[in-house]
Image (cartoon, rainbow, N blue to C red; front, side):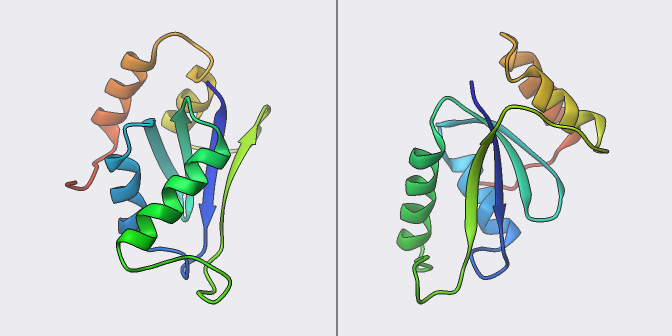
Length: 117
């Protein structure tokens, strides 16, 4: 499973719109955020597919992202990481390569409240 980070500006979407998108997608195994406008995502899909799904979601909800909207976002795959983050985020990043996504999902449920779908 690739390690993916999703970043966006305020013009692209609100935090609630992003959370609703991530919760609604069966392609997103889990997600966690501890830094504003930055989401660490677990998914077997590649960044191109996730980007297309996000654009489609925003278009269907009346907020298309294109050259005239001013919104900017990126899905990025990464292989290494270092910094100062919450233990839950580091667990998410470290366990992407493990075979324990169910245990990780339970960890998120304990620490992170997800909005209704």
